[in-house]
Length: 308
Image 1 (tube, rainbow, N blue to C red):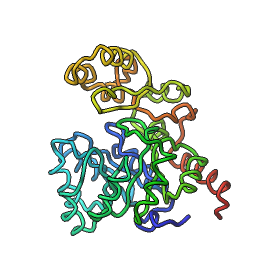
Image 2: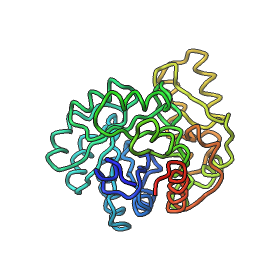
Image 3: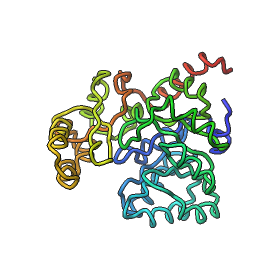
Image 4: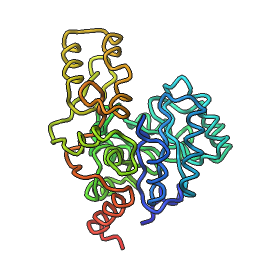
């Protein structure tokens, strides 16, 4: 299964793992890479030395390429950008902002830069600044989201740029992969399904909440102040939406969710924590190893697409 993305990244399967804060650490990244995809370490708000440590641990677990997702809003983004070069990382995805100021340094070091975009305009701009590919992420995905659906965003981005496009948001099985390819994507990014993988360090409460989720269990908080986040409904989302309707300030709402993602992922607080997950949570019914997931998804996709 060769595409421009598998060639660019030196991977077997056209699947990359989402750089999810608190979730995408070295165990998961190494497992996805070892299974034939591209595993990513999620930089999130972590200090540079923590990211360096994660990179080194991942490299101990696999000799396959591992990438890093840099959250550009992080106060440590400048240092993390340097660590990527120092540690010989060859692929970076970026979220929450514009990676232009690091492009020159990364390019000089032979780093492939793949920004996550939620609009055609940003995709075009990223291509102009030398991005090697883009991830077009629809609002079905978990965590921070844009407004466009994957089904409408991907083909518009594909038509707008000549670099390869990776589809993300709402993809969790072979049918989703085949559909993404039909829309013109050359790879997919998957997050939510890998959350429940055996290698994922996420608390079992969180995994079970995703596995038991129904189609209607997805909620979006933060629309009122322009920072929408998709997660699974619980006490926290109900409280948040209520405060939003009362017109509470961004600061008051932020205070409610302070540390709540970490509490859900690490401590298993699925009542007051933020259980980030995409709309495909309702399709996920079991815990498997990353290898089992990848093989199953590729088998399904291959049958549908008549790949050999």
